[in-house]
Amino acid sequence: MRLFHRTTRSLTLTAEGEAFIPFARAMADAEAGARAELSPSPGGASGVLRMTAPSGFGQSVVLPMLPSLMEANPDLRIDLDLSDRQVDIVGQGLDVALRIAPLEDSELVAKKIAANPRLICAAPTYLKKRGRPVSVSELDDHACIRLSAVRQWPLIVNGALIRKHVDAYVTTTSVEAARTTAVQGLGLAQLTYWDVFRQLADKSLEQIHLEDATMEDLSVWAVMPSRRYVPNRVSVFLDALRNQIAELGRSLGRAP
Image (cartoon, rainbow, N blue to C red; front, top):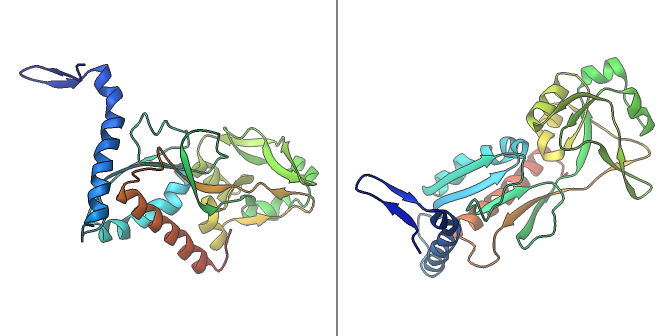
């Protein structure tokens, strides 16, 4: 089967070649992983770590840890896609995807990295002007900032998950935009802990607790295409991510 179109001036992949790339990478990773297992490189992880992460989590947690990770592993390269859409990690040839939304059943392998519950928050300026809601029904009296992908806010009431319609004063596809507009005092936002932990720490946002409802528990998951032949660069990255989250928790004096 032809995988390449070759001329004297160019070399391009056929459709079959494009389809074969993820499998070729997996075979190359398996060989590299086996060699690294038997004779680990003194320089640490190497190769290109291809990964994707939600934009908000990537900006607040993943990007700050990259300098120390790459300093400890000078032969490591990063190919990072920050996006809130779920990509086909096998078709895209990715090593790992960090996901926060509830996982769908699939043949992919998922490992829990950390708890990441949803929470409602608002800027002190907004709360001073509009007051602090204390019940689900009082949310109807407030301007809310809603993510386009979350049309209704999930809440736990009497042990059951409900979907609460809120008045969307601002609707956005971006977690960063939702966080920024919340800090600007434009309304209440329902985001996850690791999206806003820095703003909670510096008091630019305050968490709101409802008396008759709790928030849905979510987690940060690492999703990989296979349980077998996990490249050393993936294991090194996930260990560093766990350490980063644990260190942030200790520095903040709280866990989500």
